[in-house]
Image 1 (cartoon, rainbow, N blue to C red):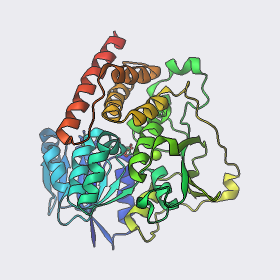
Image 2: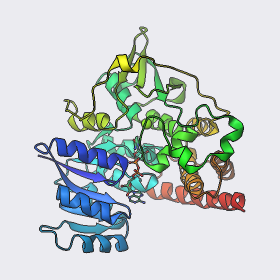
Image 3: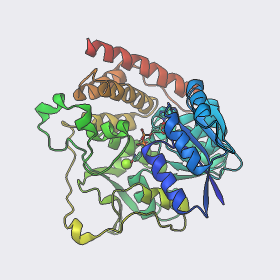
Image 4: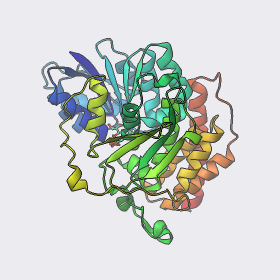
Length: 395
Ligand code: NAD
Ligand code: MG
């Protein structure tokens, strides 16, 4: 039996992960489940999956969970806070850790899992954006495995040879073609983007996801974060990554080789495919996803991204090129700005404005030789700056 810790069990990725675990209950067992504040949903998941541990983000939520599970025989041990998340990320009974918390909040437990030598199933792309060097180093130094869950990166991983860590040039790769759906605002008139509501921004045409990543898809910041994620995962740089808008979300990304070959991974836009792939790797597992029928897909379209419509994508490319603390600042400012947009404090174009102004306001610092505390401090300073900019815009 393979033990699995699911960080962010109540989210979109967490629920899909538990679906794959349920389909293969003879192979996988949920050892620990975690959630932010939704004690009701976590209680329900605990009754169905009987984990040994359950973690809520704070003591109040943990108290509510204890109340909800009071009558459960073999009730899980209930923990709370970052210490609880780190504890369940390193359990000896957990072989795999699904990192599916949203945002920089996922960094500490993801890093702890890597340091404990786990197979880390990485959905939480923000961890790599904030602390790519630290996380990659923790994986390499502790014999951990880092398997990408983000559909594009999982696709690229599937299209690369097993020895890609020797360097993409060494294995004959010319460049990575990172596909993007373009999101729900792909062909909205630019002059109407200021009127987009949170509901419209979250109405993704091809993927059902959490609210933060849905807004990131609408601004294409998601693709920008994914460019940075790809640089770390595949040891490359922005000159070797091209973003291709592909509205059908059937091709999940492609790898172009020097001999003219282009390899792609295709499938229905359903996150259970990359989740099952990473859980079974190097083998395969039934994910429950309907087989792809190319006749019903019929057309595959490709477009260049429009950086005027999607300034967040340009900001992310710039941050990736500049390096240092720029990606961490970009991420923190974006988290603050997206939350403000969802709270209707700023409009959609305000997200790129807040991110751009935060990047301009803070000095770029080198990260080499720096540890987690330094990065968390950068993250906090960027959040404070972005909050001020949000308040100024909201007035
Ligand atoms: P979601 O909002 O649906 O779920 C987030 C999970 O994290 C929930 O379980 C929530 O309770 C928990 N959480 C939130 N804030 C927390 C905090 N401060 N402390 C502890 N737990 C907290 O998000 P999602 O769509 O499942 O995305 C999760 C991650 O996976 C994100 O990093 C996202 O970018 C990435 N991802 C998601 C998809 C997708 O299809 N949903 C695809 C690719 C990558
Ligand atoms: Mg993705």
